[in-house]
Amino acid sequence: MKMILGSGRTIDLSESSIMGIVNVTPDSFFPGSRVSDQPGAIEKALEMLDDGAVIVDIGGESSRPGALEIDWKEEVNRVIPVVRGIREQRPEAVISVDTRNWQTAELSLEAGADIINDITGLRDPEMAAVVASFEAGAVLMHMRGTPETMRELTDYRNVVEQVRESLVAAADRAIRFGINEERIILDPGIGFAKNAEQSIELLREISVLKETGFPLLVGHSRKSFIGHVSGLPVEKRLEETLAISSFLYLKGVDILRVHDVSEHRRIFDILKVLCKPTSK
Image 1 (cartoon, rainbow, N blue to C red):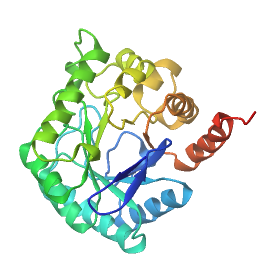
Image 2: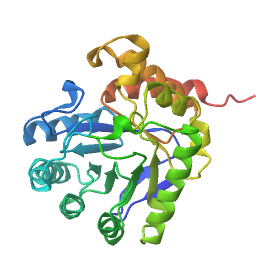
Image 3: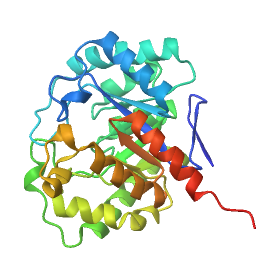
């Protein structure tokens, strides 16, 4: 099964794919993901593609808990040169841009991006209109409030069912705005308006979200809920991230958004061999 994007580029959804994270920001939660200059960000993205990333996700605004919104023009200055640089050197690469601003989305798609990864789930009709007009892929993430306020919005009756209902509603809204349902990807928003226990519950019950029928993306890499379990700082959460990724791979999650691409490719390569049906 393949997702065909408006650009003509495709994502193979027959097995779990890796989305590599490139943050052109000074304040993203994991220092190892930050790249302060565009040439360095382009180089990092190309390295991720070489290491096995199917998609690279370029972000110009931090969405860590408590992060303040930046002006979209600053976001554009950070992101667009990176998108252009990757596209010039890798015409075949699938490029995602992580933004909640329709202006950034429009300019990114004009520069050669294929997917808009929106943490607000296309709440803004103008964002939905831009994505629809370019026939781009759309990642719809679940979040209450904003990164600045979301820590106070973790009161759920049943976090799994409510996140599922919200994601389905976001997908329905996107379709009404003209986005092709075959280009919609859902993301439960691990850590976004969820405490550690709620994030773990969503991962444990990820099969419930798979039942929506839409491709599923999960971004869990090195996040704070891991530290809640292990007591370790972000720099030392690779092994736990890989354990969760292996669990999600076995559950059939379509796209895993991670910082450490090479390590994930190696894990997935051996899981693919182990999970291959044996001939009798």
